[in-house]
Picture 1: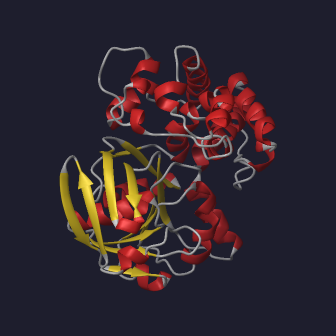
Picture 2: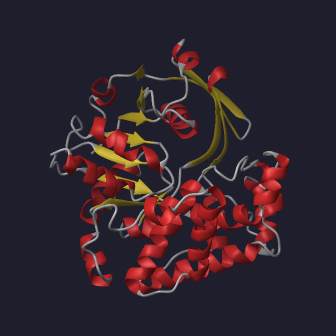
Picture 3: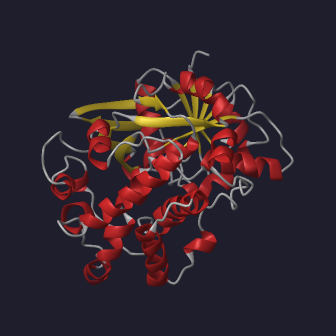
Length: 365
């Protein structure tokens, strides 16, 4: 399949940036304007243009189409790319599954949340039994900020390495061969379990955010987690979560990248021999990211519910202890009055409760 035309569903930082970047690369790009998961695109729609800046280079890119009609948005597109938080997947399954064709590739380009599995599950609940070609990444392909009222984006990083797998994994080659044409940073992963275990956010965000909760409350958001919240002591919770995540992966015969090397490979860390907390503090990307502004933001809510709860559940099934992960889940829930074990991702909640051991998981994903 030669990729020439792409639809982008989701008009946040990632979607708007992807529209400009992929247009610059020579692809025809359609944007779907969703009322639920889209910034106000009125300023972009005035001229269908997005100004883009990356590494000092500036350009203005003309978007092919911006529409609120899903069928028009995906018509004749080889790739339909969804760039929304994990909580939006069921909504997009509802509107996309009935109209997408089986030969169109669905790429979920965001922090992973077993989104491809959930998309297929939702479609089946709707009575749709298509052979979807759907894959998800372990991270958004950009570090970026979109200024919609100015119709412009500032890209601070294009990721150097991003994992991609399809669900089911028998479709990974087909999905990868299409998607690598638009992002050469993609690397094939064996399955979506690998992709979700390689999610960098649950590893780094919830623990240090929890340990800095008082500071976040006191400053009312005038806080920089990567620059000041990850210290020689708070980084130990990151290392503890990493060890437990690696133990879960090892029980599935999965080899993961370590925290430092993964971020060097993706461009977030300089390749320097420094302690881990200093690499976060001085990162050419992370040190400029402000926040979280609240303990009820995605660093706690999303990264626990769609990340740590899944890792804990895999540990339970595989009989791998995850005491530090479990502590963060419990205390994070106590902090903001939520039960993440009830609302978070488990194999049961995404329709895979019949997978009871390593063999079941590896042969059905």
